[in-house]
Image (spheres, rainbow, N blue to C red):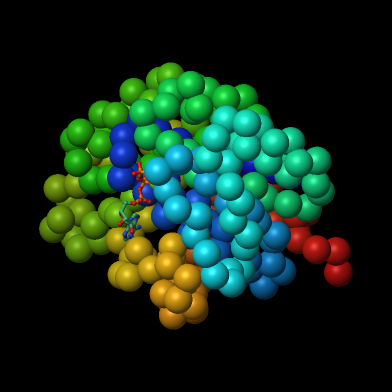
Length: 207
Ligand SMILES: Nc1ncnc2c1ncn2[C@@H]1O[C@H](COP(=O)(O)OP(=O)(O)OP(=O)(O)O)[C@@H](O)[C@H]1O
Ligand SMILES: [Mg+2]
């Protein structure tokens, strides 16, 4: 059976879409690439196009999402990354039922920290991803209080703001940034797989 990681959470603009694509790009950029699929669920999103190191599929209606998951889950050696929708607690609960790991991104603010903490309370197995986190020492020190809104045991290490990352979704910009974002993308997918207890070599194509 395929393994499933879902990006969820009630707040908009936290990085669900970006991190699902970045994680998939990381999976496809490993020394032994892991076949990855991003399932787009937000009815307001366009499907990302262009040749990629992973596949993008359409799950933008409940029926499509159910069909795609049924088809993909039956495959072996596949990592399915579900890009969730803001303000859809019902979708989040469905994803929590099927996913090996649910991730809730949040940015460096009191409001996003509080929303992530509330989402984690509703999804007991979910883990937060501090996203676009400052690295400059002075700013990072101030952001520390927002990090600590989420207990350390329930978050991944913070992911920094990555320049030009919005290009990940564009057909042409993807090719332009694919190389430069491969290192942080690999770092992210390895953190995620480790947290989910998944050995990437179990998903990679057989030698
Ligand atoms: N680590 C990062 N570094 C730089 N930019 C980022 C990072 N994460 C997200 N962004 C940017 O933040 C914006 C919002 O991200 P994104 O669209 O992925 O959020 P979302 O949770 O999917 O939003 P929505 O709830 O509307 O679906 C985008 O412009 C994206 O490029
Ligand atoms: Mg999105």
